[in-house]
Length: 257
Length: 257
DNA sequence: ACAGAAAGCTAACATCCGTCAATAGACGCT
DNA sequence: AGCGTCTATTGACGGATGTTAGCTTTCTGT
Image (tube, rainbow over all chains, first blue to last red; front, side, top):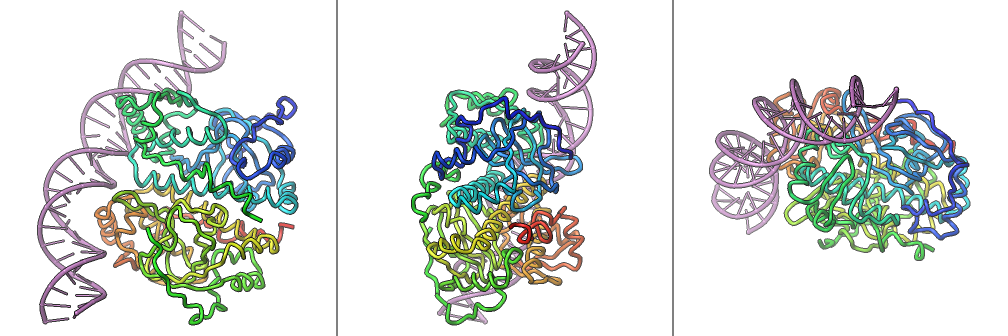
């Protein structure tokens, strides 16, 4: 598991847009968000399938996903398990700051762009911007909440519904970061990826995709999902967005101190 | 989902022992640990099956498990899903401090004793004892790591191995909090509980228990597991303790600042 | 346009698991 | 001791999923 070489592209892309409209948005002022963008020391591009950080490898920086999808993976002799997905705006390895070594790999799903912040800088943030530090804690708590929902999904749903639930979650999370979805979600996921996320074989993932098509719920082609009835899809997947803390509960900045 | 009445037993039990030898231990000095014990405003006892905190209920305090086992559960019309277990020394709803409302229930597995800390007090801690605040963040990161392992377990193992993995995890976590296990782990878990943790039916959990017995790996009677070869059990469950960050990685206090 | 590679698809069979039904054992209560 | 309830156990059947194998489609590079 080697870290693949990255192209540093800081000079080519402006970061002063709304790329950081992600998960941290709830708890931070515009000033804080600009402050965080300022922390980013470089932006890198990585190719599909490259490993941005390997399990057990020590690191002295953390990465914010700017564009693309990232998997958390664990590998055994002949299988890969995906335990989570990150979307733009997510800190993909913030916990590496505290734990020093991750228990899983950070893997690019399709081409990605990440912003890098050194742990030295984060130490200063922790000391001097308690509001930002708290927002980072919230972000890791939200990761845990999503993990719990994945556990429930694996315990509760069959393969077809798991895939539907996966895209239902993506739909809502993309909305939460301001990327509204109309009739399609485009991803670079293969059916192998879906299988590794849902804990089924690739062949069974294929059956599930076919079943979603037969049921008229969604059409999935090469990772891209098309539907004209998101509510029906979400109902089929028994999707309940509460766990994403999209509205009220996470907005606790005002009643902290 | 009602919160059942609790017996307040502060006066009957001394807290100045090593009950808080739990997960926070790595990152804190004895002084810090004594400080945390001092935060506890009351100790309560709850009966088996009682709900200590319901999903969506606002709360203004957090609980440290002092004695017993606690489940994180989610319930649908006719099923219950267990997404995690807590052991003595764990903060069971620390994330309620930041999120205000939990997305799941906190449920007693057997009789439990919990120590309560008001969020008002925690706010002060966050401001005045950054070392303790960081330890709390670490604790929630460890929760997330355990969640990821559960996801992997559900994706990877059959029912028999999942149950073995569950007890393998308990064995290691109990060791990490100084409760060394010899030949038996005693729990109040029913086979229904095991089923809800492993995402299988109770009848299939029973088959799995029988299979562990037939294979000579372990004997499980009413939640209590007996074995004379923990290594064989862990190998069977493909258990790898890295995700519990038992030794090095979590001990980062010294190189923080 | 073409070839090779990657991804998607299908069929057949075995295993894992859920459900239903029924029974046996363990525990608490009176 | 006797009763009821909760828990554990077993058998039979069907559905869900894994595995193997082979085939088709789509992408990509030249």
